Length: 65
Image 1 (cartoon, rainbow, N blue to C red):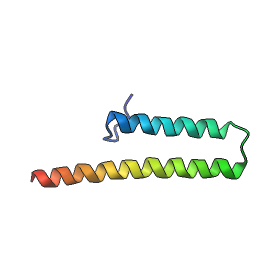
Image 2 (cartoon, rainbow, N blue to C red; image 1 turned 135 degrees about the vertical axis):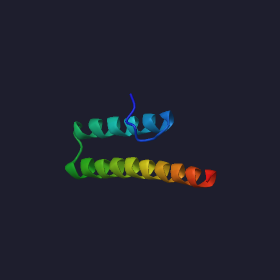
Image 3 (cartoon, helix red, strand yellow; image 1 turned 45 degrees about the vertical axis):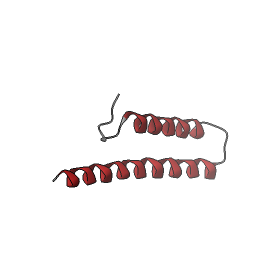
């Protein structure tokens, strides 16, 4: 399964792990503020990972030129 985000397999596995943690947090007996905090952290990590990977790809393309 690939999301076509340009990520390698390790990054995809880490993102899937973060999503699973978020799903378990949403259906657990935690407080609402804790669930929201975990959701924000997971979203931020996925977003930053994707952005960092795209920046690295752009740097590789520029160095080839």
